[in-house]
Image (tube, rainbow, N blue to C red; front, top):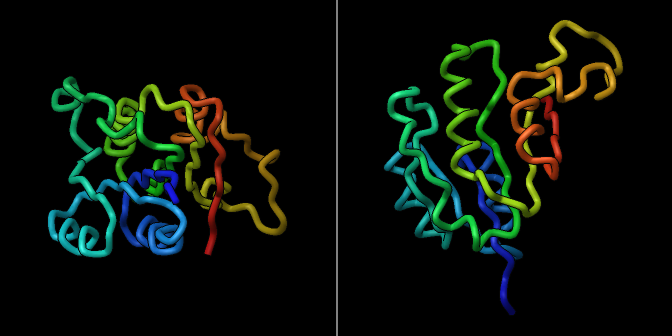
Amino acid sequence: MIKEKVGIIGCGWLGYRFAQYLKDYFEIHSTVTSPGKIKTLTSEGFHPELVNFEKTNNDAIGWQPWEKLHLLDHIIITVPLFSRRIDRDRLNARIRNISRFIAAFNGSLTLMSSVGVYQQVSGAVTEDMLPAKEVEGEKEITKLFRQVNILRLGG
């Protein structure tokens, strides 16, 4: 049986859990920022690549789409594109570089976001209270990839 291929952008604590769950059903390709994770992920049958999405404007000029992009059926982005604890310039670099990395992707795309976008709201919340077009990170991705599904996670 030929497995569909999933790309996980950011195989950190969240991406790794997705990879673990999906590995029996999909061939997993991922990006990591730590060279130490390459050996571990490879030994588990994943196909990791070392990529740093936080390069500055000058460094990002040569960004090319992911070489595996044409092979992938699905992409899951688990790299945070919104955070009150991370410098805005760093987040903007991530957004810009990830967008270039998956530029022409037309398959299924899921962005893991956070309920932290709601700031100090208490009680029940809905996505209508704060649409993606008003959230940094989400709005840039939705402009480029109309097929994106956004999941706002909370814990």
